[in-house]
Image 1 (spheres, rainbow, N blue to C red):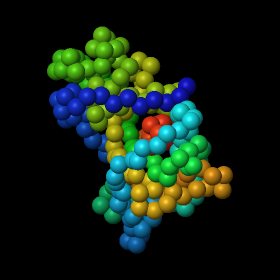
Image 2: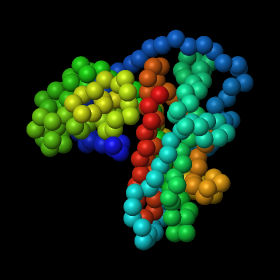
Image 3: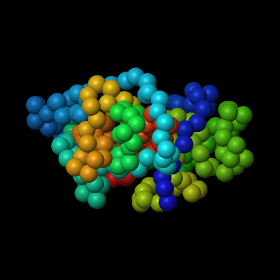
Image 4: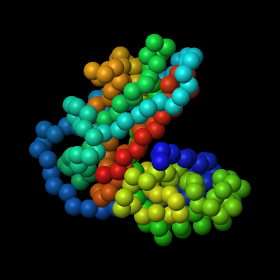
Length: 235
């Protein structure tokens, strides 16, 4: 089953952001002092921004997105994610994205939005949905308001649809998770797109904070023709 990510409206988000921001704790160890993630990050810890140009594509099928991790090369999540431990107690990873069917004869930029997310328990998820129904029922998606908890009640809450997230607590047919860290960049705005040997657009070594326990990496891509693609993998 394809994975889909759904966002909801800002009114519900404002009412429930305090409930959604649930902390997690864990143990950590310190890395060498010369471990500077910005020296490894694909964008030097900057997020190139701007507006996508417009373009027209004959093929309007969704973009094909692959996600992995790695500092210098793409590694799939069948190999366990390497987690780095910061001097101030946080932990992070370096992620990788490939887009295999970009229409590079029509454009030279892509919008990339990436996130790490952390699981919430069934009880935590149910409490947020219940509060959404009481606080702002008119602003909720129709199916959630009518009692089917298939959509997220508020950012930074997400429901990720799919069957590849073994071990996550489920809520109805979905997985209930909270966004942990995110970045949005325009690929190709500062430097030319990087292509792999097979011609796919590649971004390697993108720094993101990661949860202390289980988590999931989500990448959304949009092109100037309006095509989008999404991929997500848990670790």
